[in-house]
View 1 (cartoon, rainbow, N blue to C red):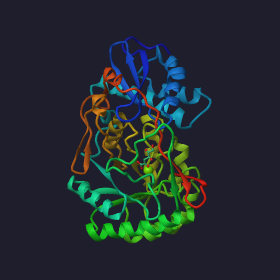
View 2 (view 1 turned 180 degrees about the vertical axis):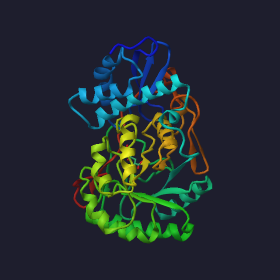
View 3 (view 1 turned 180 degrees about the horizontal axis):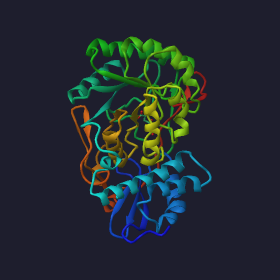
Length: 409
Ligand code: KDG
Ligand code: MG
């Protein structure tokens, strides 16, 4: 097991910082001065992953051969005995991504070259349009169209409900966690189901048929409610309808799938191939949303993506801003290679994140372009990170407006 000189891991450390929002980064160094960076951010539970890494994984890395990515993955996955789960799989992902970064730097190549080279020149991305009401959402779509987006996720406030998760108040991204404790929002499915088709009718009326439209139901519906929504949205030809039911129960999608042809996407909370298996095998979804950071890194995510290819399911990686630029860099590198790439979520990170993370990817007119520098193309300034200490922050939670019952948010 001892590494040959020249690729031995001599240091690994965990960095938790908050340049606008919390990020956890694993930094691995080899004896000949190569550094790899892995994202370990699990929104709202950041310190759990930092501890998993610091207390239980880092000691196992020192002295090992950085090139043995697969073997180290298996060691961390099988060796823990307690398999899967978001904390474990995010921690493993951070190690895996840092090691792929190192390997590609040794090779002097961008990561996509190690996976098999390019399958495409650029990657279609979708932007986020949200508004407190339909008019505001229409204006947000107009702005994104100006920037060249060809695919847009549209959400709006629901009449009769106050602020709901998925809709921003300030015109910025809707999801940065805020507050020392979660705020509580009110939800009513009947009002939501009545409202959503009116939003998409207004969008098609104003912008026509060419735009790709997406919508996120954020796990809040029963299978039958989801089937109703899918049917009612069919006239508006969505690119996808996301997370219609809670992700815990994949069988729920059988009912939805059999009742509607609206394309379905799910999986941003998945962390293993075993979460995705039934949905893919039975072709109950069109897009799998698992991300590299929460689904075991490139080594495991690649297995999910290649399994999906067999069943004509394409990828649509989660890309909200709680995934660090490292995860975006990796998503673009693997997306440049993956034959069954579908689309990439794009929610630009906000200032001052660029003081800590420098990324070589870029957005231009509705598409993203991965960089050509060796590795995944994202580096972290540890000194700068010290200026942005961790701040506990939560996303809101949801209760039924009717009687205060706890609900999915
Ligand atoms: O941390 C949770 C967010 O990343 C998630 O709620 C965002 O649903 C989301 C999306 O589709 O990006
Ligand atoms: Mg989502």
